Length: 452
Image (tube, rainbow, N blue to C red):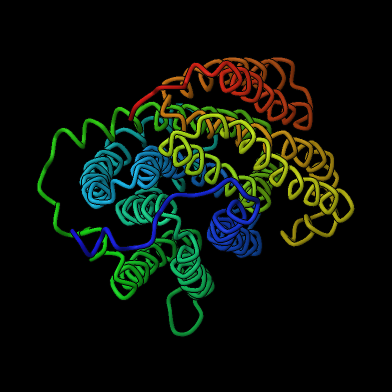
């Protein structure tokens, strides 16, 4: 214990240098797999427009479980950050190990659901039998990457929560390089591999997730992070800590899953409009992932820094900190907004589709780019709520926003049959509905005194 106590303090300050030192490595760690996703979709677009369209449905389905994992990560990150702010270093390893145990349990549930329930679900909601069969076959392969993704996210919580986000890029860079190589090899049959088409992308992603996890645990070992926090000494079941993690994480997991399930609902409605509309919408998902990387990084920074500052009993600095993070987030988003609108045609041309794709896609791209501006502000305030420890409030905010989102999507896309550009305005409405209550809650200061 004495060795741990002499280690540098994990408490943060509210300077811009501190904000950027945490957020920029996170942004790079998020950006690398998003580059990977874009390249993956370029490969699938070269394979066929149908493959690109199917990737939209399968990608959002997998994302449902991915964000369940992200919710667990965010809740655990807030707890680790709070312990770091309180200088209760001895509890960090225990929290991490119990997070891994929860991850393995949730992975088993995810795999079981995909094999026993998802096929019937997709058969009932998708209209094209060939797309339905292909989606099911793909997901029965892809879902085996979930255990590795879950544990991988637990390392995110540890590294971000202890202000060591600079190590994130190593694992994600490895994952991206491996995935691109095997995408090219397995989709098209290069370097002696059998051409597997769409399913090749599923196998490539699993291999990449395994390699990314392996590399980051080697980093943890050789940087002596494991020994400092005694990560591998607490793998016995500790119900009190599991209950604490779930009480903080479960509302966020539910919040994220509700959000992505509603997005899957959106894609199902788009599928009813035809293959091209689905392919255009899938490219928009890439835009949110790729260009939203800095936004999500600042959101994660808001979560961890707010929790750490509260752990230091500096409640008066929380709102000024959030405003400072928000300004950085908006600045990056504004740059993206300008670039996307100037080079809209050039960006969409990378998918190698026809002129009809371009004509339908560019107006949607302009809507999405504006939604990214709102997202850059809303996510910072929403994740600040997570950092205060009031994750149940997050769930209620999300529930309110999703009701409006789903109602708007169904009315404009399915009932009134408006162009998908009008349907995509739902993103602007959604982020406004998240921003307003998050901002009002933080300003109310009802979170002061909340212990986690």
